[in-house]
Length: 138
Image (cartoon, rainbow, N blue to C red; front, side):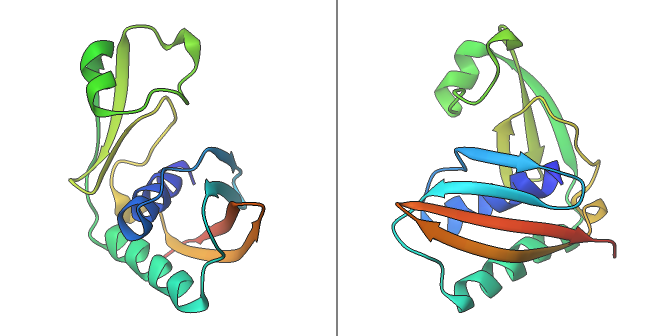
């Protein structure tokens, strides 16, 4: 689920030019991500988002962990969602050349291990777009 969240965030940035989710709840059965957004997603956009993410999953990209010093990481990434205790060595999770982000979570070794990505529901209220998703084994 955590690796799928990375792909959702990276795809939202690429497709809509928004920031990565500002809030997420990751659970084994279902997950939700919240985005600052201007409107609800249209049905075609939801289908396109799912197709793009599933396409990246099928590419079976390697998920690589790199460590960089804080100053270098601050030049490339927002570190605001990392816990204070992380220190000066920043762990960056890269999914092929598709997405890269600082993260302390557990991840798959290849995107193909994620499973099929399905958006279950979306909602929009007061400038917040919520996307709920689940994974199905392939």
